[in-house]
Every structure is written in C-alpha cells, then in structure tokens.
Image: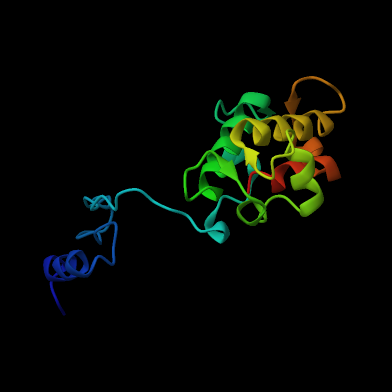
Amino acid sequence: MRSPKILLAAAIAIGGLTTAPAVKAGTPPVMLAQNDPGPITRRPEERQSDPMLAYDIDKDGTLDLAEIKSAAAARFDELNPDNDDSLDEREAAPVLKSQDFRQADANGDGKVSKAEYLAYVERAFLLANPDKDATLDRKELASDAGQALLRLLR
C-alpha cells in the first residue's frame, strides 16, 4: 500500500484533489492551496440558473431595479464585443427579437445603446412588478413578464 504522503503528492501534481485524504481516522482534511485561474468567462450554459442567487446582490430574497440594471449592464457588455456602446440587431439577437429590438431602439437609428437597453430593461422590470413594491420576488419572476425580463439578462 502506498503511503498517504505519496498519494497526496500525486494528487497535487495532477490537480485532482482539493483536500488531502486524512492520515488517521478522525483527522480533519487539509485544504490545499489552489492556483488562481484568473478571470472566469462563463458560457451561457454555465451561468447560475437561479436568478436570485445570480442577481440578488444584497441577499434579501428579492430583486430590485438596481440589481436588475447591474445584471443588464453586464449582459450588454457581453453582447458588445466591439465595445462601441451600441448593439446592432445581430449582436442583440440572443436577448432581443426583431420586434423587441425595434422597441428598444428608442431613437430609431438601427442600434440599441446601453442607455436604451437599460431603459428597455426598466420597462420590463415594471411590467414584471404588478404589486408596484419596487422588488421582484420568486413568484413575480416566474410570471410570463418575469421570464421575459430574465431573458434580457441571460
């Protein structure tokens, strides 16, 4: 049988474990230092599926307009790889259908600026908030209007 030290060294070398196996029964595991992977870019399928966990910055169990706009601004930046402060219809396609794109394009110039996108998101927030309490709970997010709002953030 190999010694625990050899197994631990092998696990560290291949990066396969985050904790070391206990040497004796009842000994707590030792946390190993992890290399900093740098900034993480997430593909859409890796995004947090629970909107409360993903966007509820103050962890109060609801989403307010500031939290929604923060998420929307980040999503706009993801959709805008050329950093030109506007989305053309092709760039906006993951979140805006053609009809929605035209509605979001308030000045009719064929592009949606960040300000226009955030204003469109705000209108969607207001539609998803029928009780007008300035926050969205899980029930409101599950509604059709809530789901339409979440599509603008994902």
